[in-house]
Image (cartoon, rainbow over all chains, first blue to last red):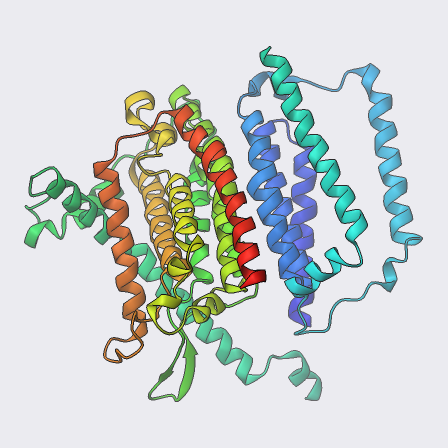
Length: 167
Length: 351
């Protein structure tokens, strides 16, 4: 238990530090690099919660796919120009508004959302892939299907936009 | 006293940790040094295919050639381009190497064996967790950052183009590669590599490659996607020397360059082992009645067949054009693997 506690502190501190770097650094490629570090730390935290599946999927999807696409775009940006750019003053209220909403949301989840009811699985009892699959296809079938339809819409949308651009 | 024993791990745990550490050191040592042999082998294969002897001068049949090359690379001047992003430039080769090595954590080289003197049963793998396949796919995918960041940090057009190609190729073929892994999972009903091998126990007809009619097709999808993931000919668009000089590694020299090479070779070894584990029965002998050859040697032998195959392919096939590469990935492999998932699923339900 003590070792787990120490590991948690290490992962959490690195995650917070690197996510601070993501928002404060000027060079977008460095930001993307720190975002990778943050996501890897979150995966490690999932592992501490005894959910290896979630941890691995986190690395697979976010680090292995989403951020590669991020970097793909960022690599093409003129870094010198991008690192000089700042938020235009007329956009700032919007940014502050989004930040405030996110803050309120997080506080609500922490203090009202019943976070203290969530318990870790007992030591040695990992969350099995079979369990996750069965739950997804029985108890959570409706949200699951909704999400897949949303993804399908996004895919069709991307294709439609690409066809439009060409014609 | 009781508090202390509560905090401190028990003797069995300590022994386990030591065991894992020893296994890690052994595997890392093998994987780090294997490229010395593989580079020599690759040059020999190239030579013999092109009807010349290959390296001959240093050692018997040039065996020490790659050692000499290694010494040369260590002593070479380590150039960092003046306008490069120094830190990223330095860590990029390491980022490429670490995932390629980490994959070996889950690879089983055999079942457990008894070590005679300490009477302890030792498993021939570092970890067997129930999401091992996903772990390999996830970790293997990280190494593309080494190529991307290395190319970007060099501040050179060729390198940047190479890294962008590497990224696009990785993204496209990762899908087909993962589908092939899903196929293996469907055929064997498990995500753990040890269980996948155990599902193929017995005669060679139990191997996944002979899971007719889908097995061979899954193997082809896996193999082609793996070739692309490895950035090897015929899919080595990111280091295409005809159009990009050397792609993402054009500005690298000395040890950093050899770290990229090391990453490439360890990835090749891990993919070859995966081919064997997924489709060719892992450490199982083709006929169960051959007890003389230990299972580990079966695995190593089969793996070397695949490594040799990769090398022969490199010197016999021409390189694809970039748009052909994308066509193969998106319009052939992905639809094919979707159909195969359907067929395999039906076979699992109906048979």
